Length: 86
Image (cartoon, rainbow, N blue to C red; front, top):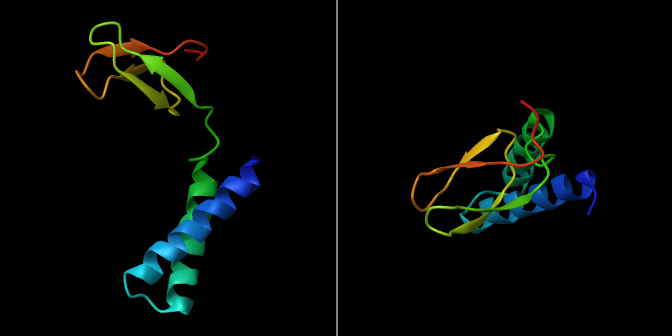
């Protein structure tokens, strides 16, 4: 899936989410478009996903951040992210 597809999918999901919570179609579409555009501007969905494993507790999770070290969501241990430049 390309970057443009991911942002279009996000916008559609946001629109549906807002509609389910009682927003009008027009307002939901406007807000979803605004949020998706801000995510696109910030590069929120552009990061490469990596599966990390904590050496301390063994928990595995998908990490899409850009930091050299990630924090295990289970135990709080810092985990080195391979392939990220300092």
